[in-house]
Length: 192
Image (cartoon, rainbow, N blue to C red; front, side, top):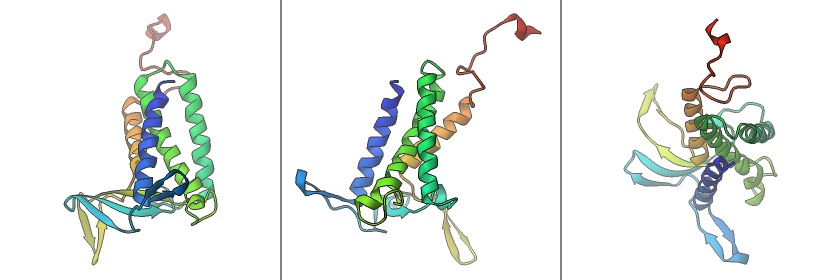
């Protein structure tokens, strides 16, 4: 299950960057990271790429379907399902496994935020925290009726992993029932 090292690497990068942006204080072990103020923005590449600290109480793109506890439960069950699939098909299509490892990393990364951040930072009960977002790409802004709308919402590494994983999954195709490879064996039945 070496593919889970990819998941672990992305998960660590996601959580470390979120903790740096949000801030962290563990005096018992000498760790103190000031973090950013909510809404604060730091320019990386002009207005095109910024680090902007916000929190998303909902799911991707701010959608609110079923509440936070349902999101936690669904993400937890989906994560277990992906781990089981990866274990069961450990010799399967490597690109399918990469896609699922990316999706798993993103799901678990945001699941950690929702489950523990509210409790850890004393802002919400366990399972009811918000997801920390900070990557602010401003490709272009659309003005409609006096309001300005950004092309892409602020996101995090976990969100990016899920998005890339879904794109890879769409490219390689979903596995067929009982099939974990891209090639079908040449059998006499296939020529009928």
